[in-house]
Image (cartoon, rainbow, N blue to C red; front, side, top):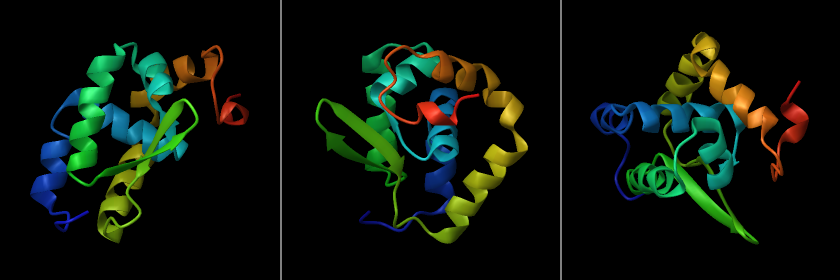
Amino acid sequence: MTEPMTPTTLFKCLADDTRTRITLLVVSEGELCVCELTAALELSQPKISRHLALLRSAGLLMDRRQGQWVYYRLHPDLPDWVTAVLKDVVDANQHWLEAEARRLCRMDGRPVNQALCD
């Protein structure tokens, strides 16, 4: 992150439904790869990747490569208030992500976090 995260930057990032769902799924799961997000959101890989690039360039998400997978997580240098706001939103809105969470748990060949599914 080069610039500090401001409320304006955060809320601009989250002004799009897809970016909000991506961000909240990442907060909920800790880390997700592109293929998990495409399965959960039922969107194409190019569309997911475009939104991830915006979230990454804004400093909200950070990526890492592991073999063929690229994983995304919250940027570790985010201010505490950003992390707290995002966690509060996830905690208060689990029902809003129910369908995505179900699709994520049913994903065939899921690379990680399968143990989190009931």
